[in-house]
Length: 213
Length: 297
Image 1: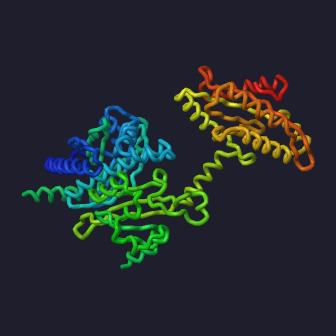
Image 2 (image 1 turned 45 degrees about the horizontal axis):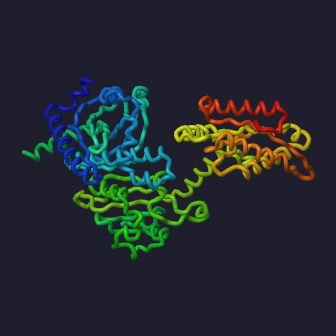
Image 3 (image 1 turned 90 degrees about the horizontal axis):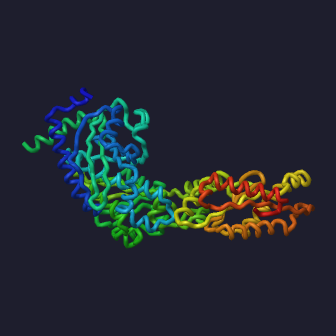
């Protein structure tokens, strides 16, 4: 973990933190407009973690809820990586009330499992897109996405090999807790960037800083 | 120029709409399957031709594409289809609409700003039809057309849960053909098969649509009867028993009679899961056999 911590200088970490703060602030405002729901995003916490340490790291960060819905989505651009959105299990029922009211009423022929899964994927898609879209916009990049995938995982049972993140990769974990104002649902967003994005990111952070000088 | 050729020749629906939901491009596939020509729809609002799309869910996804540059996916599993179009070819008999898997993404201008969005429409009717057939096959007994044991387990669990939640009755009948071996031995196996099929037909004609007939083993059947009290279950069981013993069976030139025995179980405080219900029905069936067959216990 020590060597991982030194990938970014203190100054770079500060700029990254600042970029995240601005990006998530904008994402909050625009999410309210897009989905008519006020989402509260906490100030992001940035850490560099080794891929193989991630499952344990998640358990610690998530206050002990082991069984989770994990939505994974790859993003591709100069800034590339994986976004992992984690909801404690049970959150899907609350999310349907927020997001899929009209589908829940109409599609009596769709079973509940399908509706819950599709709702998680849709919510994940929008939240991930909003956060990453804003970060990359600030850093003058834009990204495309793979379709999101939903996994239901027991974090305490996952061995690093089963975990959808490469063991040897360094992960810049950007953790934010978000809460929907109208419903008491909390989720965690982790962005895991690929190592090859790190050089680009360092440069982009520098450019970002210079633009204010 | 080269990419533009793909737009009209690809075997997928493609359309481009702008921020005001006006259609800018409409490919030949969309024209062919929707019956709406490009010059009819280009320039007008998508919602004026497809008012059913004007839903919060669809608008939300469009906004997230235009605002964040998101990609959105409309799965067949949840939505069945986005654009109501007839199902292609021979599949029109089994589907009222073409089943679609759709996705939506941003189109950026030279300044990298999202200016429009595209929607791609994939026809997955054939795949869904195969899925349906596979599910049906994995749940059905080939010979009799009744459900098979694979189906029974999951169905009975669901019905038990439902009946408990709403505090409604649930009955299970266990049926065994009396001396079935004799039919096979005296008239041959084709005749035995015929007897099983006919028994199933007669039972199906007696029970309700909401009841499920299952071939449990060689000559053993179960019927799961939701919303059915003990008293009603016995009544139905007697009707079924009579429908078998009152009418002779004719196969080729042979005419013979057969009978069935039935054990009845109900969901109650002691019998409240799959195992205990099956056990109780099985015990009742054994008693019916012991008391001289062609009976209900």
